[in-house]
Image (tube, rainbow, N blue to C red):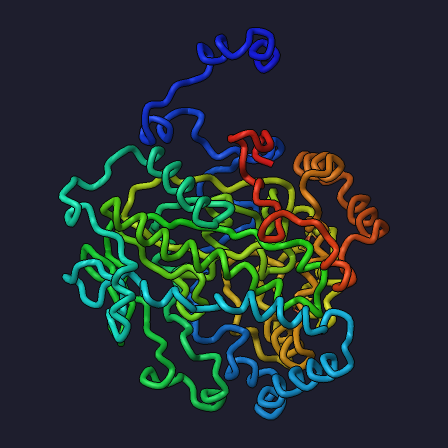
Length: 509
Ligand code: SF4
Ligand code: SF4
């Protein structure tokens, strides 16, 4: 109604009614600067997401032993099968290429090669863990050599500029950082305070670095001088730093920034042929966001620790902070976190900072509850890696009597057999089917999907009906060749998601 009043009164009246902001600080401090979610998303109390957590069961996960690690895979499948797996997958892909199979044509391979140019780890390592190689060193781009050109990437600190560091309320800082990170490529940005539970249970105990390598399949724990994997430790220092033997987080008040980078529905729907491309595509935006955010915080006078877009060096697995800060909810496919805005296709990373931020709350959009009756990802998983249980459990599953050592304890979860997933991916040349077929991987602007999502958030009564309806409508995998004739937004996904200003959609859709 207010909009009608504006239209009738003309631009002169609009100027009288519209708020006037004089600078960025005033804008970010306004009560219009909040994070607008879809109308049906309910906030929950801090520390109380829709998945149950028991910190007495949860241990800091050792990033060296993830399901992609050759040593971990060999525990369940034996050395011979693990060592042969990627050769099998490459041979399968070579057959598809030779046969000019649908989705494996030269133009398809070129598309994947293009996305791979800014893939895992590229450009991110020049900013390092926190830009410092010792506790007292000034913030610089790390490593400083051999390319001195890297140094020109570092922003000046306020001291170097001769100005005081930025100050403001946590709410102003939160909106300011989210606005900047969205401009740099992040889609959803949530915050939590780094507390003792995070330090004792959620933070990785080790980075992964090169531990996936076949070199360590029977050489465990991997020698640090060969794997490069360093422990993540806490010290009484003011500034985070790294050396060749450790990654250091200060024992002081810190905040975690959890981000999701939206993936492309249309790429994920073309898995398995384009599964790897769909997976790697999101790294492009992560790469941009990493250096830009590092410099943004440095120019404000604050530090960033952790690396966005580098799978070798995580602060944590990305899922817990995303769930605890309300970026998304847990899912049956434990590897991905479901967001109300775009469901499964998104990439998570988190960073630490000493810029005081206002924590955002866990959410309930009915998505985790929906997973209890929807089994679509599990039904479509060729490796049977996704749980078919009807209820989540505290108990860690086993394979051949060997408990899964690659999954985190302490959440009442549906467990995902990531080693089964990984060896299937290696032996078959790729997958990612579950992301594209997820019931929540739908096109966002269609009103019917908003109505269904809104209903799911309010009641579970129709969940089974919606699951069957989705199956009957045949949403999910598509012919790869049909992608080339689509007219998609820039970057191949809807970049207006989360935008509610500037003449785009309203209501945070
Ligand atoms: S990527 Fe493929 S194998 Fe792995 S969990 Fe998803 S559907 Fe299953
Ligand atoms: S396909 Fe269904 S069960 Fe699987 S993650 Fe998506 S909503 Fe949950």
